[in-house]
Image 1 (cartoon, one colour):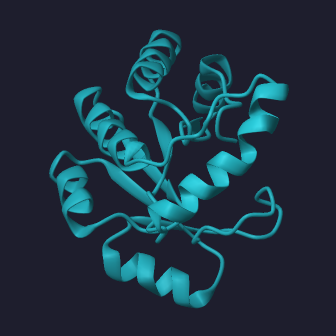
Image 2: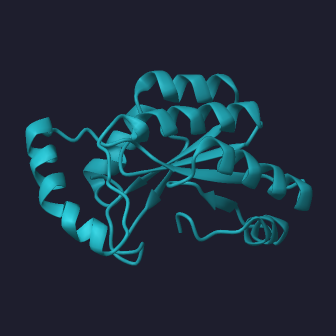
Length: 165
């Protein structure tokens, strides 16, 4: 539910005994901090933050520039911003992890893969419970080996996407 959770929803789920979770896959650090603080105002119960593990796309900059040039007339016609390929996804992920630690969030959920060992250790050192997602037995085994505390078996009902890219 990236981008469609609200602090009220997260807090209500936690208050009712579930694990309310902020869908933060598309959030920058400022938005995430704001959402965490709002949830904390509404509940003292544990809640989590779900983040997207950065992808490891391989691309040639020339191909990206060529496609951006092709799409430029359409972007102008529809008043759309030009997408810039950069390391924002990785930076946002690192900032989200730091925010989860700094704001003492008790649970961190991962979608689209498993974070690097260093991230897992950093979160475990601060007693954050880690939840991974798996759509196959092999993915569940990878999550277990990586040190996830909980593994969610994810079916096609999860928005049609897979836990791994």
